[in-house]
Length: 241
Image 1 (cartoon, one colour):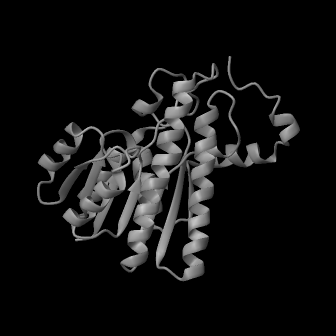
Image 2 (image 1 turned 135 degrees about the vertical axis):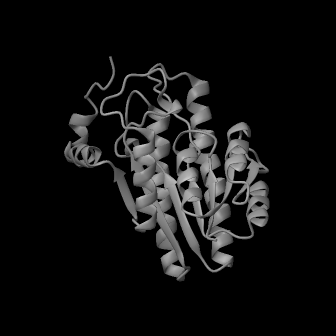
């Protein structure tokens, strides 16, 4: 069986992508802070699932990721769906710092660990959920848009690094628009997409070995328009009430 790890598999798109991979016959190592949903996956697919409790912000998370790889017996695909984000126009400090810890520091710990593993074990495929929010700085969600831009750039840099050394590591940067997941609960968002629909698009992008995939076509048009707006105009646009 092909072997994959899904980081952040306890809810949202991580959970749905893990289920799709399992239905396609993959062996999957699932990891998250909450174990209840991971155990549900294990009950549904007892011969295909191994679990590990991992908080990507903890200092021991790289060690736990290596333990999960060992339990699985190797890994060909690493899918990073762990992330947080909130609208925070009031700039509440705890929200900003927690977002940076998870989406930047925790992200880097995990991606570096799997990159180095694949470098030493013949390669593999690293796919991450970033966001269209990394396209421009978004006033209602400063740390979220900034950390997603960080993720976009970091993956691009690692892809260049891997190609320069001729490591057999592929990368897919998945940039969804607004998805109806627990991450966006309590807010009002335009063009909200169904979670299962997005998960299917993600798996298709991974199988197609896309480098960058914006989901879906409406958001692809939207982000192209955003890029065309000069910064001297963008900085005066009000995106919140």
